[in-house]
Length: 108
Image (cartoon, rainbow, N blue to C red):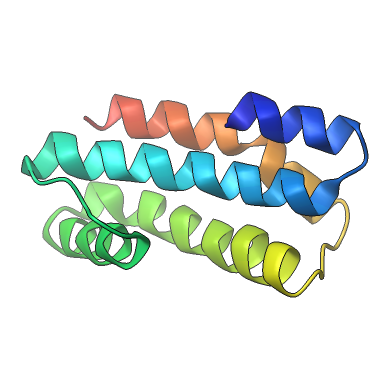
C-alpha cells in the first residue's frame, strides 16, 4: 500500500495517496497488535483500541500510538474524507509511512 501511495502522490492524486498511506499504517498496526497479543483486530476501531491498550500497558508504544492517531486524523479523516490536504505536511506523512511500518516491525 505504501508504494501505491507514493505512486498516486507522484501522479498528483494526493487524496488517494493519503488513503493508501493510511491503509498501510492500519495494516502495520494490525500486524503489531496481532504479533503482541495473538489476537487479530477485526476492524479499524479494534486496532485503535488495542493499540491504545497496549500503549497504556507499555510506555514504549506511546510514540506509535501518537503517530497512528495523527495519521488517522490527517490522512484518513482530513485529507481523504474532508478533502483538506495541506501541503507539505500531508506529503511528509505519506512519505514517512514507511518509517511507521519499519518501527512497527521493530516493536514486534
